Length: 174
Image (tube, rainbow, N blue to C red; front, side, top):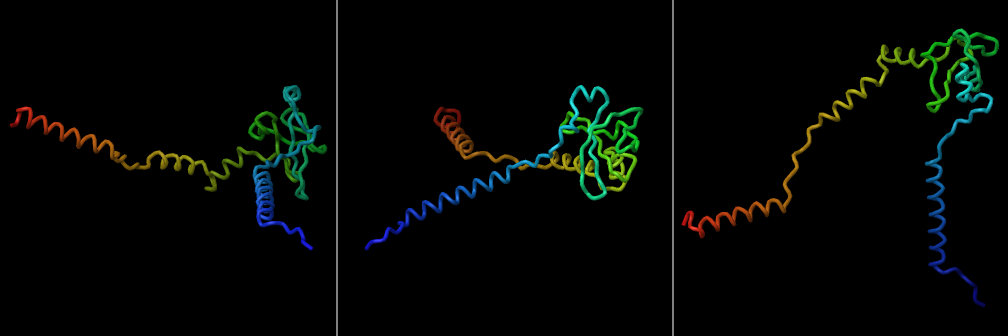
């Protein structure tokens, strides 16, 4: 009796299909963005932002984080019945819209990007100077002269030959 064995082309076709599926899955995983999920109660819209509400990103001592909404009153916010001092330099914008403050539970002042920037510049860890230096080096790179193409060289040679021909045959030099 004859058994129906798959042919070589069938096996290769199935292998090609499985490879394509695997490549597509890998591309989807590479292109997948990591979205930070923020609870609805912590989001601050335009109306709330006008009433001095901000989103508070709290870092806890057990290395977790939560999001809350708080109102700024007299330069302070209340988080867990502890007043926290807020300055304009401490407020960042989440996705360019939502005013956000990052607060660690063990501190009464928020994590300030302004203070961190100045500390990193003083300590020499900043990248501000490197960006300027990189742009300067990138703009001052000496580029090689562009070489003349073969067509331009042949046109020049033909012009010299034609000028010589007309000069000798036309009677100027002959």
